[in-house]
Length: 103
Image 1: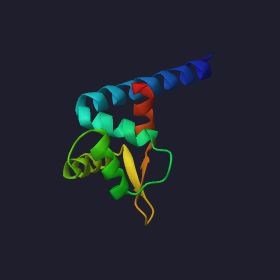
Image 2 (image 1 turned 60 degrees about the horizontal axis):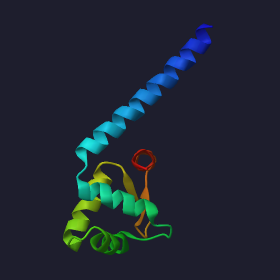
Image 3 (image 1 turned 180 degrees about the vertical axis):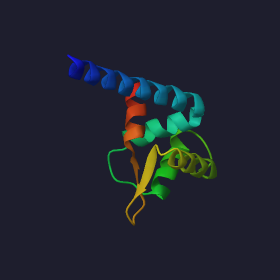
Image 4 (image 1 turned 90 degrees about the horizontal axis):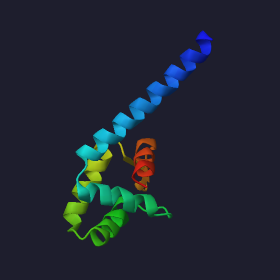
Protein backbone atom coordinates (compact mmCIF):
# COMPACT_ATOMS: atom_id res chain seq x y z
CA UNK A 1 0.00 0.00 0.00
CA UNK A 2 2.85 2.39 0.82
CA UNK A 3 4.37 1.77 -2.62
CA UNK A 4 1.12 2.75 -4.34
CA UNK A 5 0.76 5.85 -2.16
CA UNK A 6 4.34 6.82 -3.03
CA UNK A 7 3.65 6.49 -6.76
CA UNK A 8 0.42 8.47 -6.46
CA UNK A 9 2.24 11.21 -4.53
CA UNK A 10 4.99 11.39 -7.16
CA UNK A 11 2.40 11.54 -9.93
CA UNK A 12 0.55 14.34 -8.12
CA UNK A 13 3.82 16.22 -7.59
CA UNK A 14 4.63 15.97 -11.30
CA UNK A 15 1.18 17.27 -12.22
CA UNK A 16 1.56 20.10 -9.71
CA UNK A 17 4.97 21.07 -11.09
CA UNK A 18 3.64 20.92 -14.65
CA UNK A 19 0.71 23.18 -13.72
CA UNK A 20 3.05 25.60 -11.95
CA UNK A 21 5.33 25.70 -15.00
CA UNK A 22 2.39 26.44 -17.29
CA UNK A 23 1.07 29.20 -15.01
CA UNK A 24 4.51 30.82 -14.75
CA UNK A 25 5.14 30.60 -18.48
CA UNK A 26 1.78 32.11 -19.39
CA UNK A 27 2.30 34.91 -16.88
CA UNK A 28 5.87 35.63 -18.09
CA UNK A 29 5.30 35.43 -21.85
CA UNK A 30 4.05 38.41 -23.81
CA UNK A 31 1.14 38.06 -26.24
CA UNK A 32 3.56 38.19 -29.16
CA UNK A 33 5.76 35.48 -27.60
CA UNK A 34 2.70 33.26 -27.12
CA UNK A 35 1.66 33.90 -30.72
CA UNK A 36 5.20 33.14 -31.86
CA UNK A 37 5.45 29.82 -30.05
CA UNK A 38 2.01 28.83 -31.37
CA UNK A 39 3.19 29.69 -34.89
CA UNK A 40 6.42 27.73 -34.46
CA UNK A 41 4.43 24.73 -33.24
CA UNK A 42 2.36 24.68 -36.44
CA UNK A 43 5.33 24.68 -38.80
CA UNK A 44 5.82 21.11 -39.97
CA UNK A 45 8.88 21.47 -42.16
CA UNK A 46 12.39 22.09 -40.87
CA UNK A 47 13.16 25.78 -40.92
CA UNK A 48 16.25 27.59 -39.78
CA UNK A 49 16.18 30.62 -37.53
CA UNK A 50 16.26 33.15 -40.40
CA UNK A 51 13.31 31.45 -42.12
CA UNK A 52 11.37 31.25 -38.85
CA UNK A 53 11.95 34.95 -38.19
CA UNK A 54 10.52 35.83 -41.61
CA UNK A 55 7.43 33.70 -40.90
CA UNK A 56 7.02 35.15 -37.40
CA UNK A 57 7.35 38.67 -38.73
CA UNK A 58 4.47 38.07 -41.14
CA UNK A 59 2.29 35.97 -38.83
CA UNK A 60 2.43 38.20 -35.77
CA UNK A 61 2.74 41.48 -37.68
CA UNK A 62 6.03 42.76 -36.38
CA UNK A 63 9.40 43.88 -37.69
CA UNK A 64 12.01 41.19 -38.28
CA UNK A 65 14.14 42.73 -35.54
CA UNK A 66 11.25 42.20 -33.12
CA UNK A 67 10.81 38.63 -34.34
CA UNK A 68 14.52 38.01 -33.66
CA UNK A 69 14.10 39.42 -30.16
CA UNK A 70 11.10 37.16 -29.56
CA UNK A 71 12.94 34.08 -30.87
CA UNK A 72 15.94 34.81 -28.63
CA UNK A 73 13.59 35.22 -25.67
CA UNK A 74 11.94 31.84 -26.36
CA UNK A 75 15.39 30.25 -26.62
CA UNK A 76 16.48 31.81 -23.30
CA UNK A 77 13.34 30.42 -21.67
CA UNK A 78 14.20 26.99 -23.09
CA UNK A 79 10.89 26.77 -24.98
CA UNK A 80 12.61 26.40 -28.35
CA UNK A 81 16.11 25.31 -29.35
CA UNK A 82 18.33 25.72 -32.37
CA UNK A 83 19.33 22.27 -33.59
CA UNK A 84 22.47 21.29 -35.46
CA UNK A 85 24.62 23.41 -37.75
CA UNK A 86 21.65 24.51 -39.85
CA UNK A 87 20.07 26.23 -36.82
CA UNK A 88 16.72 24.49 -37.29
CA UNK A 89 14.20 25.80 -34.77
CA UNK A 90 12.42 23.13 -32.70
CA UNK A 91 10.14 23.17 -29.68
CA UNK A 92 11.59 21.71 -26.50
CA UNK A 93 9.58 19.36 -24.30
CA UNK A 94 8.73 22.39 -22.15
CA UNK A 95 7.53 24.21 -25.28
CA UNK A 96 5.39 21.21 -26.24
CA UNK A 97 3.84 21.08 -22.77
CA UNK A 98 3.03 24.78 -22.99
CA UNK A 99 1.48 24.40 -26.45
CA UNK A 100 -0.64 21.47 -25.25
CA UNK A 101 -1.95 23.61 -22.40
CA UNK A 102 -2.80 26.49 -24.74
CA UNK A 103 -4.84 24.28 -27.08
